[in-house]
Image 1: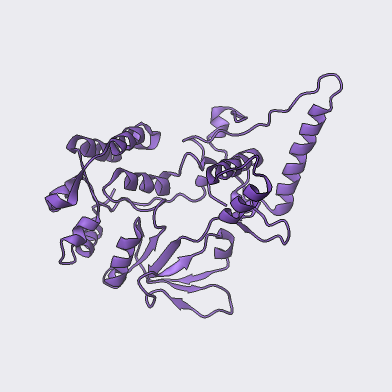
Image 2: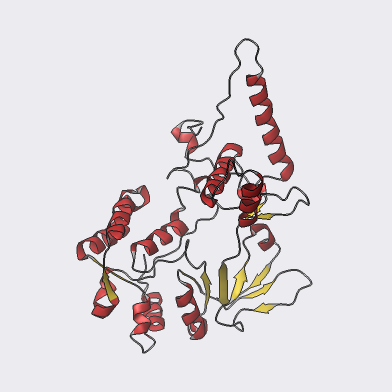
Length: 322
């Protein structure tokens, strides 16, 4: 049962802790003791309602369980198969597992990282970055990788052991893997000293469609579903993607009418506090809604002449980002 555990003022600053295993176990034991004491009360036995922090736009979460047999991190997909096979009466699909993990984060006030759960690797990096995974490892030169780049592990704790060197001036977060590979193939990072990063979808840099803008907002503001942990990982990313002022550069064949889903997504995004309080973002949503069209950033390189790389370079040099 999820409900506010404190006043709005206090909840606004609540975040999930990165807690050691011993602390997580202690919190679980305390909850079990409280539950058993309430249930075994001879005069008034009750089923205890645990305090859980609501996930909302005011509080900020990251996706990560512990392998009980060897203490190693458990990948999220592996945890799902274990639960479905051993507790099929409670879990029948991935979304139910995700919600249960979210509830554990909310109840225990600790990150999934602390619970030992890690997401599958899906991100990649390429560009002017040198990486050493361990003190005895060789340096990995990310300018010499293929167009797919280097895979980014989903285990945040393992990243803490990495050593990095870079002379890059910019880090570009790219929404789509196809765009990431095109820029990598063009060696954009050599023309503009930069590092390219992609998560191949949520959460990543926005293109001109509403879903892309939603992805940008996840990077910059966090997500409601992962509210308690998100404040640890959000960053002041700038919007470098297509905006309403760029639409005249796109050929008519590169424009698509907004679908009913697009319009519903725009309407929902406009209601979010971080959009309502950001006039520039709100204006872009309203312009898109009024124009009734959307464009993908791929339309630029479909026009040839390296328009995509030149477009990004011009935006950076002129400071044309939000």
